[in-house]
Image 1 (spheres, helix red, strand yellow):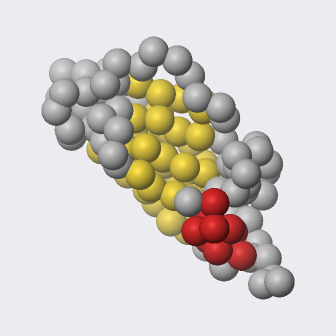
Image 2 (cartoon, one colour):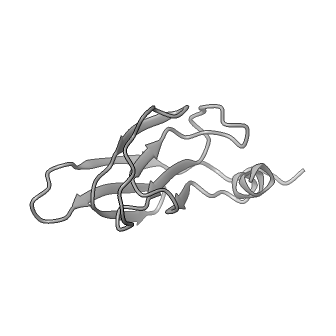
Length: 109
């Protein structure tokens, strides 16, 4: 996926959404080589409707937040920034929310 990630960086993507794992996880912005950087892409893994939910044995590199929880991710896209909010299903209390600025697009090499 490194080549695909580099293309996303070049063309100014800010967020990557994944859903294969049956859990919720938010990563710090990172580059194609997995290094944390403020100009990188933030990844969200949102497989929170899958059955069964996966337990979280260890935290992964650059992981900022993760939970085996049911719910949805609400993204609000703005000019120059975005907001996220994990909204749990009724009866559950885990929430995650925040805001971030968009990174400028890079010039293709």
